[in-house]
Image (cartoon, rainbow, N blue to C red; front, side):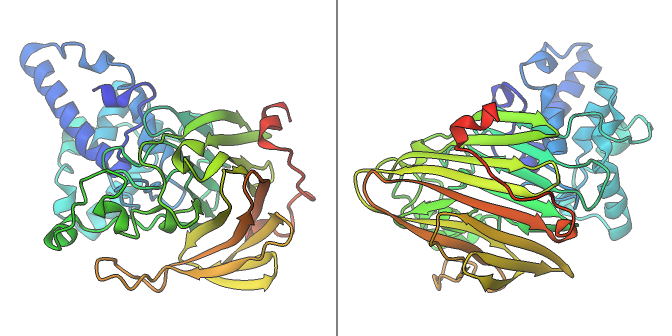
Length: 400
């Protein structure tokens, strides 16, 4: 139960939350029905709060923030019906009921083994709109934050970001990574890990979390595949942990800052990443970095399934499902936007040529400081966004 402390974040991601939390609730329900007590299990710090975790980790598309080994595809979590009744909060079922209807219409599979529990745990109340704020931060071993422009608009902008450590259970080198949805499309994606069985059959020790583990030879586990920084083509430090150092949850001041230097030990002397969801719905991503004792090649990358068209040295347009996302590189001067392949050619990697990356490379000399800044504009906001963005260094964001 201590894994839920302090804010209910589940270190392995939403789909693993459903697995572990459902068994916890089955145990609690058995104690209550047989012995008329839960022995205080529901009072453990973070357990009641964990009902918010899958809610905030679900985007307008109904899919999850797929960090660690967690998959992106959403689904009906019967445990949420238990929490909705227990906490008298039908808004917790906002996404669940939609997935329940899809599952019943589309046919359930073995992945829906907990589905009959809905009959026991749903109290028949009509799911409502979430009453929770649009912006949320959850602390824990793998801290996360989420920002959105609306609960009810299917075209809302949704951002979820992650700190933490690669050494967490089912962990990836996804520190500083994010996903982005807007206009009904997931633009920045996490491509999920490999099937365990195939890698184990190859004799790869994927459960060893040391720095030189086979696990980090797999592209989908490495930071190269995630929406974060890669320095000198090196893996993030498995012994490091990145914390969320600042958070803003007001409509006109929604932001998250992650201190990432611990996972770039020996490469960067300082690395802080800030995300600001602007009042008009645009997303500003800023990295304030200081090179370490040796020169560094830094790659900024965002993984996507969209088609990428480079329209200028600092501009690209992503297109998918007839929608657009504008990518604008604001800093540093002289950097050039590029499209990067994700095909490795390794026999153990699941190469998918439809998945690619957009980003840029920066060279730093030892001790040099630099700001990397990107502005992402959903196509629906091209003609309505408000003016030029001028953002100060991250240390001043809490004062802006």
